[in-house]
Length: 336
Length: 158
Length: 118
Image (cartoon, rainbow over all chains, first blue to last red):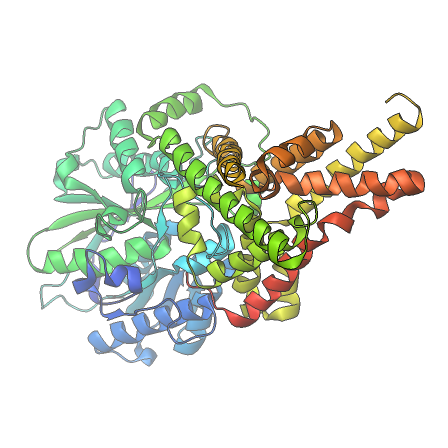
């Protein structure tokens, strides 16, 4: 059902029946290593290019989620997913392996929630019984495409972020929730927000306004207070973006409890890992939500969370052409 | 960078101010110190290599520059290939980018990275991704400077 | 010999500090910074100021990328002395071929021998 200006309520409570989460070496040494299904100790995953390695991460996540969800690919109606690489080839090639009817998505680092919102909508309105949705990223493939060759001795400023290597895929289903599984309850689709920032090494600062806009829209559309949620988590604002969005929301009259306002990019890595401001990437929010956060919910630590994935919609070319960085954020609420 | 200063709306300007409060400031002084020491160190190694060529290989102070540069780029290849030039770069910034080893690293890292696209289109097509602008502007600037100076000499001005 | 090492260290270090300031204060990309430095090197040699620096600081002046601009101008001027204006074009790479050839040859060798480590 449409509520307010840009939000949906999922009255049928589509269930997130299972998830598959794969990660790379940095994630294996990170804070949330226990919540991964598959971890690799190098960036190649046995392949001869980074882009192929990213495809393998997605394929593994898809296989895992189908195993855990006890479902065959014939029973899955749609796969809706994306990544950061040109023409989202890793995801499309993984979809070729999966042989499931496929929607390719591009929302930069907001892809995970864009997918979850759409998957929930499809299942809620009986457009599908089972939908796989997810997002992925690969540090080296992303650096190669967006920034510099990985062995280049360029110096990253402290506002830079570390693209996560990993894939997170979830199975959204219409089955009756007999086993106390998390389910989605609502989603808010964001608008593109551009505050004129141009520094591609400060994504957090560029994306914060989009996060603030979507969070404000969500609370307004659903007529909720922030305290309704046990936790509000942004996708990859990291340290700079998180402080900025808290400040921005407070300036506009919405004071958040900083202890109940976290960020996936800050949760993923340990203090001693050289990730500057924190993690980022399309896979970041997917691997933290579909691994750690849902596990926490199943343990009873959180009952209601709002995940706001944030994306920066630039390309290497747009930056060279002097364009600023337009951003977007999509929010999905999950309860258990 | 090439950004034409697009006019910012008042809302954007307000946000820019708010955002700058939270933007982690670059540790400029520390960075300059690190750049100084690493850059100086690399140049000292270059000096040692120059003397090596002068004393053992009959080069003179004027001509030792060439083999020195070639040797330093060879060393940059090893450091890039073995995966630690990028760490030095993160630490030293301009200290490793400004010496000629930085130029070598730019070419070599691009070549290594794009091997996955094949040697012709990948390595050949992308090798000068980062260093190309240095070559372009170096050559063009030299052309203009030498042209002007030669003309001035020819016309007896200098 | 020893004073040369000291000055190589100091002058080389200081040139790198200029580069670092261009990175951190002027917020230029490495590509922009190095291109600017190479142009400065060319201009300084045109003004006759770079060679004295090389005599004074040795590798502290020949190792930073500015010397690339300096060598290009040198080569061009040397040829122009002998062959007139056309020497400006033909002479440029005479002196600097070492740097570019080395970068190309070792770049290709590197691509043959190494895989990126990420």
